[in-house]
Length: 419
Image (cartoon, rainbow, N blue to C red):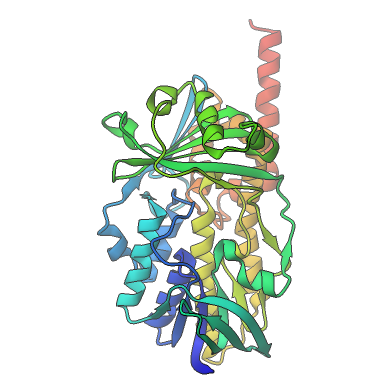
């Protein structure tokens, strides 16, 4: 059987895996990437947030991505009937990038992967991980390539960036139920033939159909737009009696007063894809000789587009820690990896939960706007969820709930005493 020897094996060639591999390669580490699928391939997660730009820049991947002229995302719009709330990433509390991209992930991920290959990194497509055995921090991974050939890859460390494939969580029994309620989504792309000119045609929007149900609209620079509906799994399943994803998505579009004219009769470019009960969690995020990054560890909810940001954050951090460890430094993975990542995940978990309770929506649509509150929330939506100077980060577990309570109380009193 063929044997290969590397310092670090990265499983998965998505954004997390490419960031990890590129950083390690740039710092002289022998790294190999194995990817089960063939690129380009369809994947969800097309709306990014500014925090990811730090990671692409640091990994040396930004120039290749920037050359693709993806649609720039300068903020995000939330719609609830006649009410509209727009966040501008240039007007936020925390320092950081003021923009990011809206991307067809097939093109985006392929660009990342080809740039990794161009750098000289060994990236192998259509190679499936069959088994992993650890001896301390050293590992032997059994891989089958597209021709059915079996080989073993010896590594000093594994970074699992396998996303929904969840290779190590599956092989090592690390999966655990998410703390979030079960939600599902259905999405596709359309040729945006009715796209308005100007900002309206390029702005990413979240159209709230009910408190827990919303439609996403993500325009791309190639003239196509991603459409998706998200809600409790029971609601998503009720959109079509025969569980026909196309019928379900068409019915969801019919519920949107804002977008029915633009998308009501537009044909889907591919059969809509359903992601059922998509939230994921794990018992632990690292072990002796491995770390879990991106969706292979935690996935929350698409509402604030945090998926790729957590993927690249954990990918970059794990690569830095591995590099230090391989150079003889003792790493406290619990503190430097798990606790750090969990603090950011905890902030976004609160925001997701309070979105679906309606409390965060109360803050979004309250009039008159409070510019200071909006700037602090905007920093969170931009992905700067480790900034403890921001009270909407530091006190995330109470500030939204308390403010929403006060605003609702004020509204009730105004209705009782209009004078």
